[in-house]
Image (cartoon, rainbow, N blue to C red; front, side, top):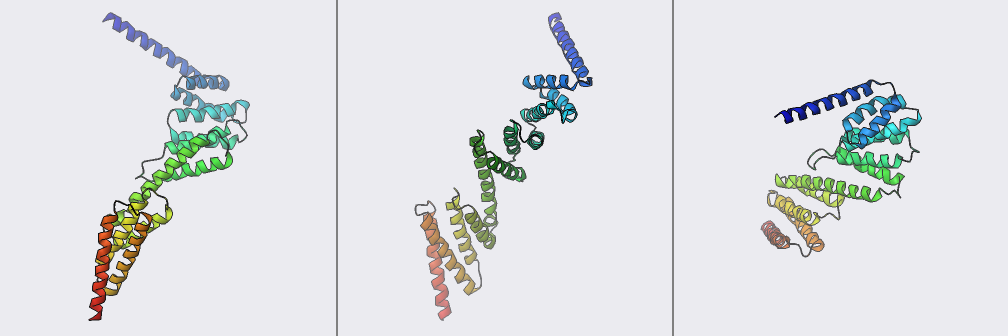
Length: 271
């Protein structure tokens, strides 16, 4: 037990001394000494202490030679600590303040990547996702030959897929709640926006099925017939684009039903 006691006593003294040294450093008026210590803390992954010092000295070093270094490590510290809102803010500050710096390209990219890191799940608001895509595009325009472009392209592809998936889920909502008229419009808009989507087959089928259900629920004879005819056109477009679809058989059964209903309406009108 005594051994354990002395271990804890030693650790307590060590922590106390370390805290005392850091507190003295914080109170010091020597900004260069603080910068050197902050970089050392950053390299040791002690991001709290690094950020504490850097947040204090960055305003004091603006306009001085050491200001660029301090601002760079400030942004890098928050990024390494996974505080992406803060890192994005500071990376943006850096490349705006030092556009000719040899670190401007990296900071421009990490600004966009910070927004990417803070991008939420698909079902939440995608403001940061859109901001990240805008940032990536701006970076690509400014540094088209950058060594970061392969990663930037990968990020852009991932973010675009997330937005497409959100739109895919949202566009099916009208169909799920049986608002077929709105579903036809929403599904059609998705197909126009994403003509090469991996969800193209399913969305085309749902557009046809929505039009079929819209016609089936119609009361007015002429409107009912017109909607069945539109559904038949959607079916033909569907099988033309996806001739081997697993949904083709089900769609074909509904198409046959459309034909029967149109003939029934025509025969009724002749009486």
